Structure formats: C-alpha cells, structure tokens
Amino acid sequence: MTIRTRLTLWYSGVFFLSSVIIGAVAYREFVVEHRELLGRDGHPSGEPEHERFEDEEAEEAEVLEHIVQIGAWFGLPAALLGLVGGWFLVRQALAPVAELTAAAGRITEHNLEERLPRSGNGDELDRLTEVFNGMTARLAGSFQRIREFTLNASHELKTPLTVLQGELEAASLDPELSAAHRERCGTQLDEVQRLAQIVDGLSLLTKADAGLVPLAHAPVRLDELVQDAFADAQILAQPREVAVRLGACEPLTIRGDRNRLRQLLLNLTDNAVKYNYAGGLVTIALEAAEGRARLTIENTGAGVPSDLQSRVFERFFRVDPSHHNEIEGSGLGLSTARWIVSAHRGEISFASEPGGLTTVAVSLAMEAP
Image (tube, rainbow, N blue to C red; front, side, top):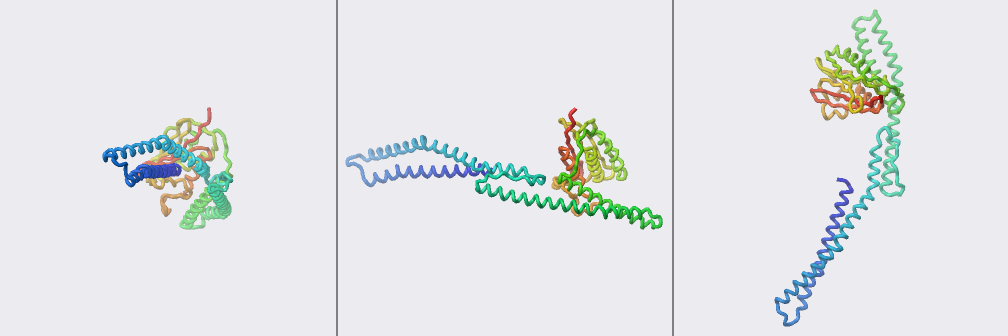
C-alpha cells in the first residue's frame, strides 16, 4: 500500500470520526438536553400525560429530522469536498516523492555521476535529495578508485606473468630436465596461464566499465560465427566425451563487433562443455524470433540451484562457494558475456534445472535488410 493511500485512509477515518462526534454532540444538544429541560420546567397544568409524551416525541422527531436534513444538505457535500480536497492535497504533497523515486530508480553503477533534481525550497524532501546526491557522489568516487586500482594491478601483474610463462615454457622444453621436472613445469605453466587469463578478463571488464573498450559497428553474419563456435565446441568436448549438436542455424546478420561476438560464443560454449558430464549433450541454435536474432545454448549437467541463478552473471561467482570444484574457471566468463551482449544492446538470460537442462539465451537486434 502506498503512502498516498495510507494517508488518504487515515484522513478519511479522522474525518468520519469527527463527523460522528459532531452528530452525537448535536443530538445531545438538541434532543437529550431539551428533553431534560422539559422535565425540569414541567408542562402546562391540565395537559394530559399522554398528550405531553406525544408532544415530546413530536419535538424529538422534528429535531432529528432537522439534524438529518442539515447532514444531508450540508454535511455530505462538506464530507465529499473534504475527502476530495484531502486526497488532492496529499497527492500534491507526495508528487515530489514520486518524482524523486523515479529519478533514483534510474541511477545505476554506470551513471552515478547523475544528480537528482532539487526543488531548492529547503524543505525535508529537498534536504533528502541533497543527502542522496552526496551519497551517490561518494559511491562514484569509490567505484572510480576501485577501477583505477584494478587497472593498475592488472597492468603491473601482466609483466611478471609474461616473464614466468616464458621461463616455464623454456624449462618445459629443456631436454636435460627429467620427465618429472618437466611435468611440474607444465603444471606450473598451466596455473600461470590461468592466472594470466583471469588478469586479462578482469582488466577487460574494468576497462569496459570505464568505457575504454572500443567496439566495431559493422554487419556481422552471426550464423557463420555460430558454425565456427560449433566446430570449436566439438574440439573442446572430445576430451570430456560430450556430444555437441547444432540445431537451427538461420542466416542472420547483425551489426556489431565480430571479435567480441566470437568471444561471446566461445565463453558460452566453453561453459556448456565444462559444466557438463561425460556422455552429456550441448545444443546450439540460432533463429529469428520477433524481428530479433535469438541464440540459445543448452547443456545437460548438474545445473544451478534456483536461489543462485540470479548471481551467475556476477564477477568471480562460482556455484561451489569453496571453489573446490574440479572444473577450472575464473568466474568471469558469464560476466564478460553479459557485457558483450549489453554493449550490443541485446539481452541475455539464464535458466537452469538442477539435474536437467541449463539454457543461456541471447537476443540481439538484426540488421535491417
């Protein structure tokens, strides 16, 4: 229930209670006290008792009739006017609250620099708007410092990781090393490469948040990219004994960045293969739906619990909170996929049934023919 509705109901209740009290006071004033006054003053001598009671009842009925007439002719219109006027005043008083709520709802982590409009009259809402603007300014500063730290840390980590990767690659090829030593070097090289991928992914997302990643805007045959992703997925699926199937693949053209769209497909198909089981299935499909290109990637597997599905696009999110899962991953794949889709002004959704199918659907605007 909105504040406007609650205030209107409270106002109506108070108005009704006041009307009841006024009616009760009027009845006591004109009926009860008049009857008591007649009892004290007596009646003209010689008047029969039954005539005296009839006169009193007639007077009471006349007074009640006058009260009802006054209430009908003046009380009801006044009550209606009061209710309508009260509702209008409440509506006018709370209109700035509705505007403030709508403006605050448009603020996200991407436009924290936007300020809510102030009335400038110095009332409570104006001061609240000032406080809210100060809070968003502090949040914007915090986000900026986090982005700067992440970019600087990623940049500083790239050089030593590159050096380590080169040394480990050279050591793993040294014929003088024993097989066990070369195997250890290979394991260390895999971990260094995984760490380098995490740094690259985090650096990419941080630059994307800051608007520092340029995107091409050219026609792209999405069906060709899907067929390439299908071929890559078959190679990725062979060691895991996962079957990959290509469903509908309509010839569709969109406008965007070919390399980023290829990265999107690689991330989604890689996830579909990794989070599967031996003998499982991955299905890729591309078709037109309601004037848009709709890409769906389905896979069997353990699935994601319903209470965690809303977090799958968060950075570094893993279904296994302890990260002890045997499946390698950084938790940045779906975050990167969501950024690529958003950068192309599309939509991405995730649905999963534990022990059943997991479906990622992407909707992109098609290029006009």
